[in-house]
Length: 260
Length: 248
Image 1: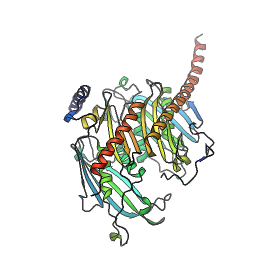
Image 2: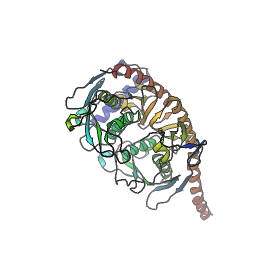
Image 3: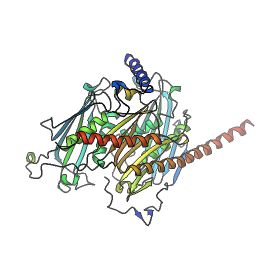
Image 4: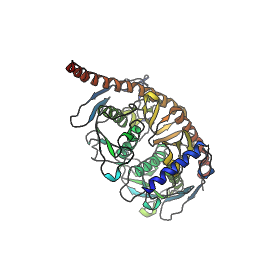
């Protein structure tokens, strides 16, 4: 109960600020919190990245293992994306099987990587119908101060940029690198009091009626979108959000996703 | 797996099932098809067959999940194992968990939850036969079933997907089109106020294609809204007519 009352007070506080044209941390409506991306930080992983957006912190590890292809795509590798909202990261998170929030987080991150065709899945085929590389993208949330989607998606593509194919471990020879063909970036916006806020923090997420994540590619085309939350959006708002999303993605891509 | 190019989906300006780019598949709506449910709807869109049932408002279980201020909406999208070519393992998978969440949120803005604190309004949607566009068919059926159950709502929700096949933005993809197409974008909308309550997209669209697709989908939601409305009017003008006669 105590938590609920505090949440209501926070919500009013955020709404009042936004009505006055302001945000917590003194940010502009179109401004991200400070972003940092550290790549290649987990030795055992074939690719990894730690992303911080303000106080939100997400660690993404990529493991590459040998396995069987799906029967409908015998000549293609496999991408499996998973997200864990571990109780360490937030008082709202509980241990146990994935709930709808972690499933949605994983599936939106997966959508960006898959639909942008960043990974050349045909290059992950070793023996058609028998042996392919399986790329596991695991999102580990460490601290949830809002906008996990953008942090996780940025972490995923950042980790993939340095991916190593572990041929030696399986006694195989072959190319150990796998250049990404695109760099999808997710940009999430929240609607609070009729205003569009880029990169909502935790309090803003709770005050928001709806959120829209826009995932765009290097050429400015779209590879994924997801609305969430209990509110509705007008056509003009959605179109504006898509335009902002593409623009912000371009800025993030230039700054954080250049080759090491 | 969207690859495009593998198969021609548009021949002489027509789609494989003979439809134009901006044409819906035939839709059939039946109301009150289940005896035990408080509200129900059977709906077909092309080869999709879906049945939706609504229970409640009734006590929310488990009790710790009750909301002291408003009703909780439960929405379960489920595919019958025989509804698809390769048998689907029964029970929720990650896809259906996500669809259930997005669909539930599509109804959040219209259901007057504050009338029923601590209660649950439960929506169960079963896909019996599927041919792409199942989540939108489910939302359309659920919307009518909610009205049939007498759940107070500000309006109906209508839903449809647009997609891209052979480089063209088209309405309401079939399974073949979805599997071989380049993009899919389902939306849900409150038609009367043009308010978008669900939006997803995957595949590849330029900004211009997105804008065109959104307009096309919104227009189609108006058509679907009229069909939903007509079905409800037909169902209830009949039984009310009978009651009036009795009173005479």
